[in-house]
Image (cartoon, rainbow, N blue to C red; front, top):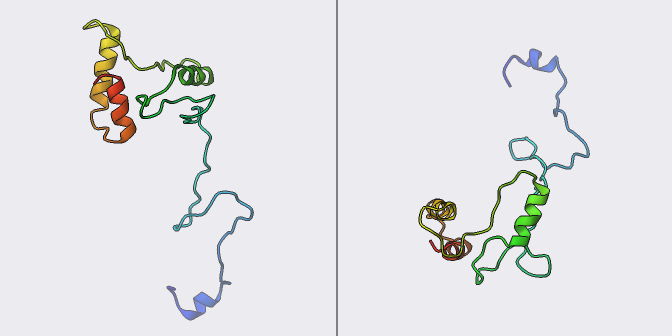
Length: 121
């Protein structure tokens, strides 16, 4: 501790402010982690009655019901399902597909590859 022993003995030793009953954990540097926030997105379920996502075998991605739920919770959202059918070159759907395929080129995971197959990339 800097200073002379006389200066150091002038003040009581302090452990710092310790906050009691805080639900957020403290990191190694002493900061508190922000609380886990619940998002507006529907749960990523691929099984059962209220599922929102397709399995890998089905081509991954969101189901129409999942998109509908998301849009209900997020008014003004423009989320859409995959472009899977045959499209006219230059149409809006063709441009969406081209954009998706360009953005998802680096997806190497199992679900990403399945989604790209479904979009016909």
